[in-house]
Length: 69
Ligand code: FES
Image 1 (cartoon, helix red, strand yellow):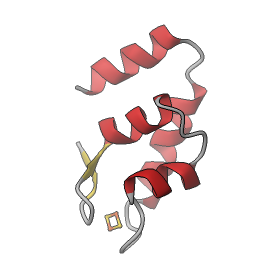
Image 2 (spheres, rainbow, N blue to C red):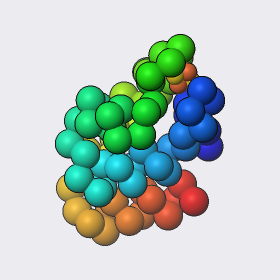
Image 3 (tube, rainbow, N blue to C red):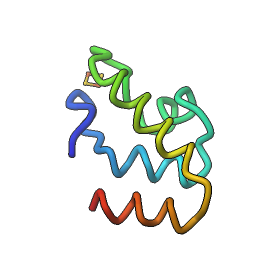
């Protein structure tokens, strides 16, 4: 699902960024460009990043990733 319409960023891309090593919202923003124009995607992006960071195991991360795709 598209989260950031300005940049065409999806929830899967945000999760991938976290699972790939981005450890906070700032790093995700820097990596993807999300929240860099109108900012309307900020709340949803923050929630997705927090959810992805709160998953403890690789298996949980994979389940979250595949559920979104
Ligand atoms: Fe993400 Fe506008 S929707 S910056």
